[in-house]
Amino acid sequence: MALLEVQNIASGYEGVQILWGVNLKLEPGRLTTLVGSNGVGKTTLLKTVLGLLKPLEGRVTFKDKPITHLPPYARARAGLAMVPEGRQLFTDMTILENLHLGAFSPRSRAGLKQNLEKVYEIFPRLKERANQKAGTLSGGEQQMVAVARGLMAEPEILMLDELSLGLSPLLTLNLFESLTRLKKTGLTMLLVEQNVTMALAVSDYAYVLAEGRVHLEGPARELSKNEEVRRTYLGI
Amino acid sequence: MFAHLSASLVDGLLIGFVYGIAAMGLSLIWGVMRVINLAHGATMALGMFCIYGLFTKLGINPYLGVPLAALLALLFGFLIYGVALHRVMQSGYLYTLLATFAVNMIIIGVGTTLFTTSPRNVDFSLGSLQMGSEILLGTRLVAAVASVVITVALYLFLYFTRTGKAIRAVSNNRAAAELMGISSTQVLALSFGLGTMLAAVAGGLTATFFPFTILSGGAYQLKSFVICVLGGLGNPLGALFGGLILGALEGIVPVFMPVSWVPVVEFGLFVLVLVVRPTGLMGAK
Image 1 (cartoon, rainbow over the protein chains, first blue to last red):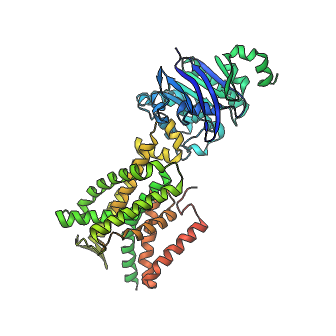
Image 2: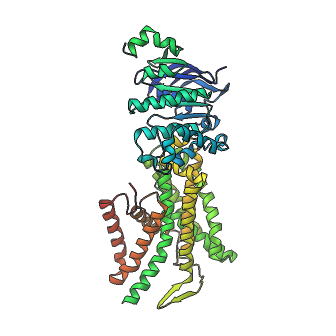
Image 3: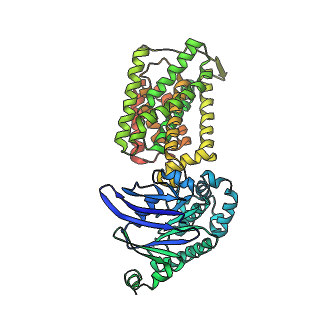
């Protein structure tokens, strides 16, 4: 049974409809990826799933319960965490404060100390700089804080939006390696990426979004061999 | 001359602490909510009347009445947020500004009907303290000490409690705070409640200083804006610092020129800081 299900979602911004009936399922323990060119509605879909946008039609269910009517904070408390595009850190606050805020939800409060240790293990640099203001960090370090903050929530589903945006290839590789490690812990993840090659390489299942609809879907390995995907997104 | 100057300066500084508290409320509301609260002065005046009522009708010591006024103001702030602000929070500065202006007019209208505009006076003294040639009024000392305690308490609350961190998170990035499981609506209501509370407390602490009417808050509100600009918005310590500067000015200026020049100097400084250092003297960015 899918952990999260997006059913026939139509969504967009004032006066502009972006998504036209999207269906998507996140199976537990699986790393699902959502790829597609710029502007096809990947971020719009994430925002709709998290409640930052209200859908025009359709519904989102989490553990078989509809959550479409819930405000974003209630969805976060239910176990959905997001590493937003552009990081969206609390820049005036320290790294440690950012991480503590990641564990704000009642469900993640008890495990705060252990989770902090785990997160520091994945990103040792954050421990060294715990009391530095998040706004003073480099882009790569900020992205680490964003991922770490998402993990502090001890989420049921972690959604990552454009993880590689603005990062050097080496840093991107490091972050993707940490995703592979997280996958081994059984965490359900949804990865939204423009870097299609890397996304397909680490994922179990993939959706290709085009013009506001799901254009293709299937196991990531199969999609990476798909002629059209190779031509359009991998440039091969 | 010197004795007169130092007495006047000390007097000004003691009042400056209370100005700081009023400005802190305005600064908190702006910093977290991005709302310019034009009902701030009227709320201060309500704080004065609250102390007045408790003192004259029930015989409650004005300084023991302040915590009660604070609690009432907190609830009043929630009410204003729920009725006047919540629905226009997404609509931009102009709407929230007009909403708080409407609240201001309502408070003043109702206040004028109930209390008229003849000045009231809380006739209460805590004696005075002789220090060398200075005579420090007990009421002003208590108000200054209370202001420092409140500033420290607010600082500790914002930096060392979960709720305080949630307030700072919403102030820093409202959408991201929601994604952390923080209800921004609750935080906004709380911030407005706390800001309103600080206004009423500042009003309550000054109730024994001068006679007042329901319109007396206007001048304090203007001063609060000046102080916020001096100290940098969104910074409680900056607000206290700005309050002290303004209080000191009010003490010093009348020694050298007619009292009517005080606002000219204050607002001259206001414009100067805006031009030279718009983030405030203690502003970070």
